Amino acid sequence: MTAPSPTALLVLGCPQVPVQTSIAFYLISRLKKAGIMPVVAGNKAANTLIVVSDPDRHYLGEVIDLDRVVGLITEKKRDFSLCFVFVHNDAGVSYAATMGAISTAKLYALVYGEHYDEQVRKIEFPCTVIAAKAVHNPLPLKKAIDEVAPWAA
Amino acid sequence: MGCVESMNYEIVLRDATFKESRDYIKAHFKENIDVPPGFKIFDIHVIGLPPIAIGLDGDFVIFPYTKPCHGTFLLRVEDPVEAARLRALKK
Image (cartoon, rainbow over all chains, first blue to last red):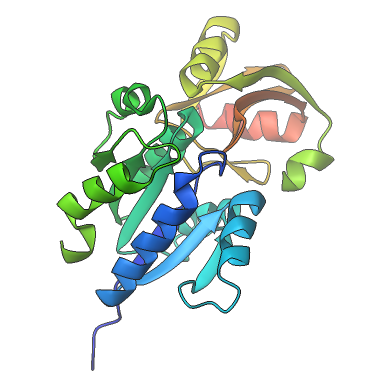
């Protein structure tokens, strides 16, 4: 019997910072190549942006409502091997802390935006912080992710 | 907002940080309890850094509600049954 494939939950934040969608697709691509099944969770706006960007589902697999996945994990009906939380505001830090408390997944906080350092200072719970000043240009955050290579851990 | 929209709620704080929300409850509601992230209040799993403070004021429950784009709202909802359930957790 083979072991189930590892899974990764990508928790999207508010889509107002442009790099989120491109970094989400980059991460999905790297995870899939490593044999890790990605699941995307966000609010309606964040999920719609990502679904419309990949109409033939070349990259995307399951996309789920953020509140729903929080409920499923809390009620022990679902969990993931890895969890990546996109953080560019205080709400993002709150979601990352919540995932750290309710899920057994290895937690990564992807921190970006103009004032990314302010959010990094709020993260005092166990997780791997991957941070870069990235707003319109995703390359600084991509580089920071590549240095950690969470798909290979 | 799912079931929040169907509630008769009052917004105590809007677009707050999580810390502002917790500090407000501790400062303004002598009766309060701490719950873990994901704890269910009404039909909502609360989001935040543990411990999450919930205020109780008679039949009113005061709790944080976090949205990715708008930060944390502190909502005040009258519900004697939920207030009693939360009050019982302190014992």
